Length: 116
Image (cartoon, rainbow, N blue to C red):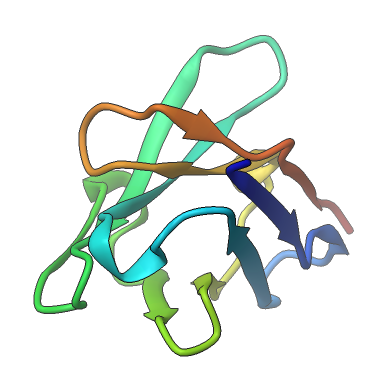
């Protein structure tokens, strides 16, 4: 069955960096676009970034542009999100999802908390 397992979250200081990972299994990873979506406390889901199946294109939300970088390693069936210059408003649960604009599978999420 399809599984998406995120990791790499945690407590980080403002200005710091984190690298989130999403290990995919149960499907042919290199055939699907993938995305990162986050949910801050008390708020709705926010699309953060997406990447084509072959990495030829990727997109990042304007709110995080210049600080977030999405990438993937199809040989390892893994999706990544590099987060630099962390801000308190980045505090959220981060989910990877299969798809570019519509998502049919989600991981359980990894919590990112930015605080000094």
